[in-house]
Length: 293
Image 1: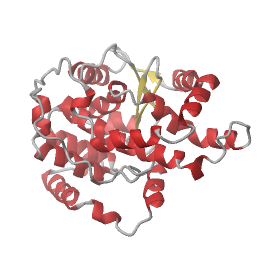
Image 2: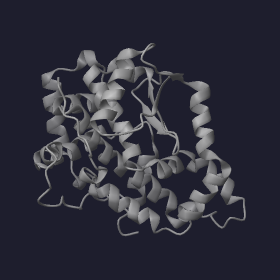
Image 3: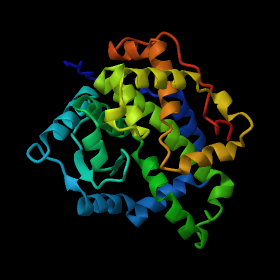
Image 4: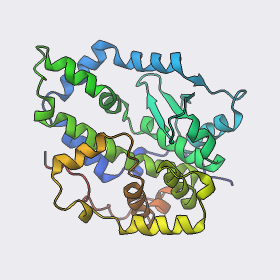
């Protein structure tokens, strides 16, 4: 399949409105700037990068050429340069990817992702993860990674940030992290440029191995995703909704597919792919539970 190179692509062209609203809400919370400063002082960025360098296998054109070539293609299509490092880490029983490194990013993919995903699906998954760089998510993304440890550390210090949960910072951060996934899901689709590939990748992310995947499974999953709506959360406390995002074992693949299908069916995906100016903004209502914080 020949894919279009989206030269000059801006992350704002495909940014999900829930992402931008959640980030704006997070930035308004007292203490966020101080926390970022302390993360820098503690050398968290260097530490996370060192953990990857010391624990994971660096992917090169020689050792895993198919994986490397899919990564290069995804970054080229999305106009992400310079090319980040790509690493492979041990299996976890389900597909995982992550990214660290504000200054020198490392995209990591686990063994299941390499084994379960096809070449085209790897373009989606790797484009999805690398898009965090383009959207400048990494500062806040890394804050979410280390928040559990920093919360305990700061609660016993004199930094004035002991009440992180009470202040809403932690909940706002986890809410934003989930909303940011909706943005990079769009980037993954722009990378692979095939709706069926994007959906099959999300189904596998939900835990289904490829041998069970067929047209009927995909069609029924898409129908399930279209039926999913914010009404599903009626009667659930706002904090409880966001706390559910702290469970990294949950893929939220159905919700994410729902949002991706909405974007495709609105015509905005095609507009961005063809690099046309969007005529109407997307609605900003939905799962941004903390927009009023």
